[in-house]
Every structure is written in structure tokens, then in C-alpha cells.
Length: 263
Image (cartoon, rainbow, N blue to C red; front, side, top):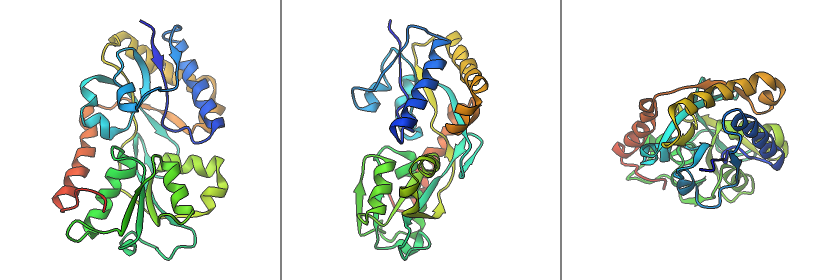
């Protein structure tokens, strides 16, 4: 079997994408030298289910909606970013720098942007934050699906939307490498926290290889600390799947409040 690996989640710019690929290459060469680093050539839910997947990163929402039955948790990164606490993270509620909104409650009737329907950080925690303010399941005048956190930030900055929830790690990277975009938006709050985006492997990967991957993750931070700093990586935590039930809890609380979907 030819193993494959990919990190599709935090590639904000081509330069940052290259940093992630170099780090990933260092990790997998310590474990499976024959592993190929690839660009996913299909929708991510299908890619994550490949039996030869050695290492990738997923969102906690699809993980808890069926993906956990076919993959193993390797570890969850601990990032150095405002809004992160250990292996848990929140999303930043953002509006335009010159917008009139100062709180999420003030955004009633405004236009929302979100990245994907199966995103915890862009949809699920956003829905949870809005739910207490909703009336008859409604809050916004319009909702735009953008396809990515970067797309949501640009929609807000370009006045195609008024508010979005953006993964705090992505938001920190945008501040690092896209300062012009960062200056065009501002934070008006934070969402509830939940476990961060986990690193996963196919269920076919042997337990000894999972342990070797965990060792390699930390080794690569130690040998290149300057790269780890640029990637905002502080370390890794091995979380049980039960910790990710927090994501379902947030979803259930929004539904119980009568707010089943962004709207």
C-alpha cells in the first residue's frame, strides 16, 4: 500500500502552504518514507476516508458526524493564537472595520457569511452563538456560503456580508501574513470553545505507527523551533473521542433554542 498525507486546513497563503508541506514531509519521513504528500483530488469527506491515509487534518464536525467510524485520532495541535486554550479553540466573530456593529446581538437583520455547512468553527459555533438572539428560528436577513474562512473574511471586508465566525487560528495567520485584509475587519466577540482540528489516520494504520506518528510530531517541533513558531505550533494533545462530543452539545443547544440552521 502506498500511503498518502495532506494538511488541507490552514493553508492561508502559498508560502504558508509550503511551510506546512515541509513540516508534514519531516513528520511522515520519520515514520513511512514511502508516504506521498498529495493535494486532495476529491471532496475532503471522501479523501479523509481513504484506507491508505497516513496523516491528515479534519474538522471536528464531520468527525462526529460519521467520520470517526473510519479514522483514528492521532493528536490535536495546541496553537499559540488568541482564542486557543490548550487543544481547544474558539472562533472570532468579525465585522468590517468601519461597520456599525459592536456586538453579535446588534447584528440582527444583518448579512452573515460562513464557510461550509459541515464546519464547526464557521457554522456550528456561529449557530450556537446566534441561537439565544434568534426569533422563530431567524436572525439574519441573508446568509452567504463562501467555501472557506478566507472567503468569509473577504466577503465581510468587501461589504458582501456583515458578520462571520472565523476559526481563531486562521484569523491569527491572516494577521501574520495578510495584514491588509486583517486591517479591514475587526473582532466583536468570540464563540464557545471546543476541541481543535484533529490530526487523523485511516483505521487501517497499525497502532505502532500511530504511536510513531505522535513521537514524530513532537520531534519535528524540537528540531525546527523557528518553523514551529511561524506555524504557531506549541505541541500536541492526545484527546479521547469523547472530548469531541462537545461539538454535538453545541449543536444540540442551538437546536433546542429553535435555531437549527443559520438564518
